[in-house]
Image 1 (cartoon, rainbow, N blue to C red):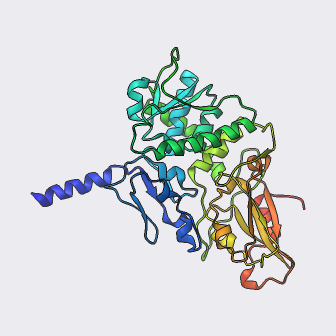
Image 2 (image 1 turned 90 degrees about the vertical axis):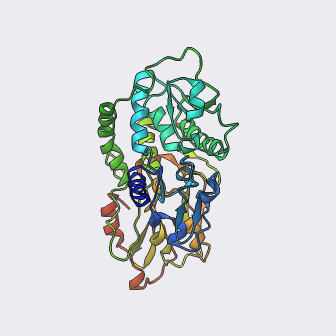
Image 3 (image 1 turned 180 degrees about the horizontal axis):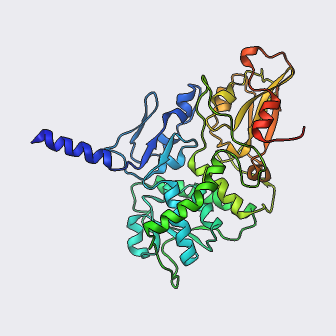
Length: 376
């Protein structure tokens, strides 16, 4: 009897979708031992995450909040219950019905009403989802935090504050008046159809958005500008991928249109960063080899070796800076939003040198053809 029950429990455990998916191949600490990243372990409010040759989540301890997925800068941790795509579909349909969207955990929703979109924790909401709500036309985006003060997962509110700040900085840069706001409840007089999201409706929205976010994921926007799809992974290369939060954020920013100001000045740890090579660069190109998102690519032009950098794909994980033994990988907070939107490529070359054959990446001409970049 006991063994039979154990089998039943095992089947149910496999069927039930765990709130976070681990893809260790994108973990910067696993990619290179010089990485100093501890964001997921620092963010977890219950100590469920440990690192032993890769991130590990103790399922018995895990609260299912999803804060770790928001904190992870790469695709190593992705929220799955629901996924970002599923949440995106719900957000769009709610905005289309009532013109605004409010997020609340189950505890806060009890006093806020049925018009809120329930999330495991406000800290699970990343800037891609928040900006997407405004991109879909939301006149207001509210985070209902009435239950946060008494919640043992206080880290959730702190994580939500960081993402709301980043989203609002982007909205301001695009000249959008709507802001992400924290509230104790939904304002009196707000009306709407509530969640009422049917499975058929979700499928329609997901279908409508698949092409857009798919194009962003490979770096190929509809207008044909900017960088193209990165070269396919070859033998001896490490996998590269954008996290779903960045894919949604790029798609959302394109919906907002042309930025009111080109420059976005961030702060340490912001989502975007600008890369530059310092004088100490030897042209080893190891930063490009280990980059988890493909923001850095190897370039060889004659006797010059260097890098192609896409600011749109940079998640500011800091791995390039951590592993450069010469201190030549320089990161700056201010970025050009026009380059983010067009996914443009900047070319960074080291000092002129004769590159060893084993150090050579694709030729400059080939890389430009792949990236769809023309001109000098």
